[in-house]
Image (cartoon, rainbow, N blue to C red; front, side, top):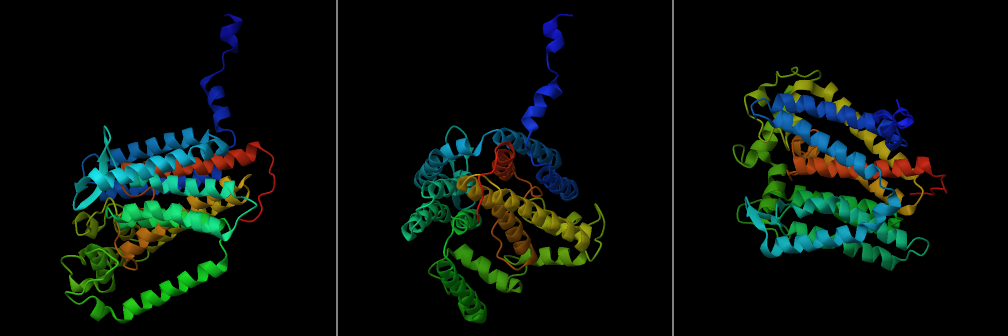
Length: 391
């Protein structure tokens, strides 16, 4: 045996350096959520052919993306912010001009393959805003927050025009989290919150008049107005627009404390729950695993968000802190909005439950987001901290 053959490193020896610095607490939490997702998909997708296998494949693709992106240092990720944002906005403009329409929404474009550019903006927008605040670090003024708001509203407005309320809310939430953690003054936060609370209260109070037939709200599309009115009173159209919410609440309630058991959900297996492998998979999961299963799922999501914020607090640069915090809040927004709409406390807006709902594009986006978070975690382990400061 030659010396060259003897010294050749094994596959494990070559892989271990690539895993150095990985946050294994974060990986454990993601693994728990992925396991819950596979269980829920196996049961809810039992008559959807290969959906369970495809869900597992999508998870592997997301894991590969996570691994690759985690190898890229945050300072290199920052260099992609402007190009990614510019390409994403250009594609959204292309969608508005000559996009493909499906089910009444113009959200896709053919660039050799059919893609949905709004998914890219879920990551590109907070990336761009984090880049902007990094450039302005130490000299932030009120005008800088105005510019950031403009950078945020461009993609949000283009996505809402498609129309796609769910994705626009996710992009808006991700962008606002960056602006908030960058140091947005409370005097600019409180007035919109107060106005929002007052507005929602007025809508609830005057619901019979506002949701009467023939009344049109000037701000929202007709289907968006219908969703809000259906949320306030799903029995208004129990076999039509309100069917999703009613069946979701029935499934969640019928699960009780311990649930009906794996593969034993009647609402699920008798096909009363619509979109039970995608947007409403939380209802199918709740029916079979009950309150205890829901508490485990919610705890896993809260711990994932906590871990993301902990990584953000100890990041080495403002850009890394803002991106890690934004990713953590992306997971919170996804989970909160999905569980809220299935439970009947938020309008149905088509937001998937991370790692649980079926969907290749959403899973790829989650893998990319986790890769960014892992990149920040690795950088703070490999470099001495320069003092993170407040978020």
